[in-house]
Length: 497
Ligand code: ADP
Image 1 (cartoon, rainbow, N blue to C red):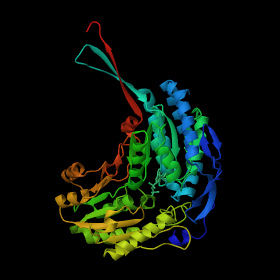
Image 2 (image 1 turned 90 degrees about the horizontal axis):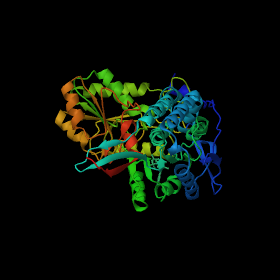
Image 3 (image 1 turned 60 degrees about the vertical axis):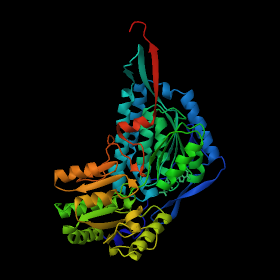
Image 4 (image 1 turned 135 degrees about the horizontal axis):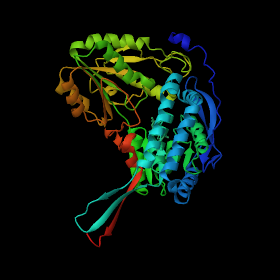
């Protein structure tokens, strides 16, 4: 399969759009303004469908429904076992509709269908099962006091949770947010990204079949500065969880602070190092560094976007990285064998091409790629830069596209210092046969995830999140439960200590 062949005619997606309205209080409804916005097919730039555009008034209605479901509804009052069973059923239904959901995800986002159908949607079902398993294991403590008191610590749901998610993994981000929040007994208003509203609506339809009471999970399609801002600054939202750019993270944190001081978790940008030591098997290192960067069209917050390669193997690595990138099959994400689909939209597409130009202008060596493919949709050739220096824009800023930057280093202390010399701290990859080097790097790197001889391993139980300006708090695993629980101390005097 060649790239040219893969791009001939867009394949008709094997799915229909069934839901385009806002989901508020268990009903699919039009927006209060009656406005809609188009969601586009990244393969062509053409309209897939028009989706109800939520704004402040819709957010307010959804928060009201979530409030009522929390204060008066059965959800937080159910036995843990009942809630757990609903989450298990939700997972079963997602699994049952796997291919339909995956097709919608591919259509709206542009990611390869096999990736959605065989990796992401199964991961989502797995994640709901992981959190379903926690529901009846969340319990308090009895702690010792120095005085004659009986002290209990209770963990309670935090209340109405606002969640804002991005477009790069629309449903995976939905699951990372919704799974733990529901497990803890909260109610939710979630805003999807304006580029990818469709899959969350389809999945949310299944929640009622699973038995989730109405008003527990409300889904709003809409834009950031309107619907997103209304959710972030709402006085009746008890907690906010956000995934997106660092720039927007600062804005929502500010809005949360200025409104009701709701606690905020943030999963933001990155500029993650992928460090290849001189003892590495070069072919394997090339494959892993390629995957670390190009996976999901390069649209990953944790992409290994600074490939540091030891000077003794640098030239050979660059040659092989070029060959690997040139073999990557770009094309219609519905076509079997395609590894890379289009970028999400015109803005991102133009931004990536601007970064490529900046790389060339600043003196990096463009080894391959560097331009669009075809004249329709947002396809970009897998691009590799060599001789990249730390100060260049392409080595400092998040490109969020299929652009690999390869940097050269001499020794371990130097690469530690350079890898950490960034305001981000999301993830890092390390490729070496030496246990000493791996352990030294794992401890020295100021990042939330270190992948040693692997990359992008995302089990439900593994916590994920950033140091520094890559975020606050962790998602997945036990750590995510803490985001969605209040802690209450109950103290009683003892008559006979
Ligand atoms: P990107 O630039 O990659 O689209 P953003 O951080 O802008 O990343 O978007 C991530 C999510 O944040 C989306 O759901 C978007 O609508 C939302 N968002 C964008 N701007 C704001 C804002 N001012 N307030 C609240 N949410 C926002």
